[in-house]
Each structure stands twice: as C-alpha cells, then as structure tokens.
Image (cartoon, rainbow, N blue to C red; front, side, top):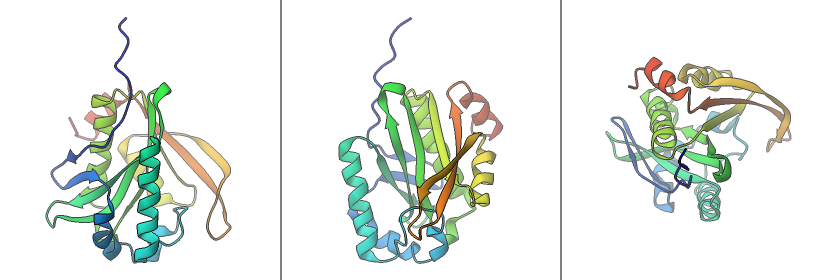
Length: 198
C-alpha cells in the first residue's frame, strides 16, 4: 500500500453558490463588525464579546498568529450576493500526524443564521478536508447548552461522541461542558449523499 501524500492544510479559497470562504485578514474587520453587534452571537463562544473594532481586530490578529504557527486556518465567510464578510469559520486543532482537524470558531450575523450560509460553509470545509486534503477525521464541538448548534451539527450527519465536563472556563466564569461530534472519511460519502451534496 502506498503512503498517502502529506497532510498539510494551507490557506485556500473555497467557492460555493451562496458563499465564498477566503483567507481571513484584517481587511475583513469592518464588514464583520457590522454583523458582530448582537450579543447572542457570542453567548456560547469562549471569546467574550467581539462587538468592538478593537476587540474584533485583536481576535483576528490572534487567529492569524495561530495560522503562522500551523495550528489553525481562519476563513472569512463572504456572502456572494453582497460581496461582504458576514461571519467567520476555521480549521483548528490541526493534527498533521493524525490526518485530522476540527471545524469551529464559527459565527454569522443574525440575518445569516439558519440559512444556506452555514450549510454551504460546512459542506465546502468538509469536502476540502476529505476530498482534497485526505483527512480521516473531522471533529466539531459545541457548548452543551447550545441546543440549536447541536441540532445543526446532527443534521449535517456528524456522530455525537461524548461530553467533556467542565471543559472550558467561559469569560463570565461559567464552567462549560462541551459536546464533541465527528465525521470519519469512511462516513463522508454517505453524509454527502444523504445531504444531497453529491
């Protein structure tokens, strides 16, 4: 059996019908700030409120540093109809030796939640991970309180793996339990077909 090619995710542009995922930069901050004002967006994310230009820009800088270090690849989610960045997502916890990564750090402006924006973003990231990069496992995690996120992850076809108790100390001091899900390479063809992504 031949050795697979190296697993080395890099920044890339992923084009869909509704969205384009492009490498995140500080140039996206002004667009993103418009969509970052609703405090509900940040309720279950471990960053605190990112609804000021200074905090959002600092967050973007920290993600770009992690990208330089090789652990994350952040994307701006561009709504193609307007050409504006309406949210963010990323590959994170990239484990090159184990050919696996996580899709996370995802948020969208309220007007784009529960729309094709999230579904297509996840599809583009999953397809690239499995079909281009040769990933064998993609994981997704969410706050145990975030039932809407859990349902969305389950609709994609990810398998619930378990609960990590008191996994994250949130900015307000809450001890967050985290639910992990995953999709494996052998499951991807069925997930893709079941979602009508073939």
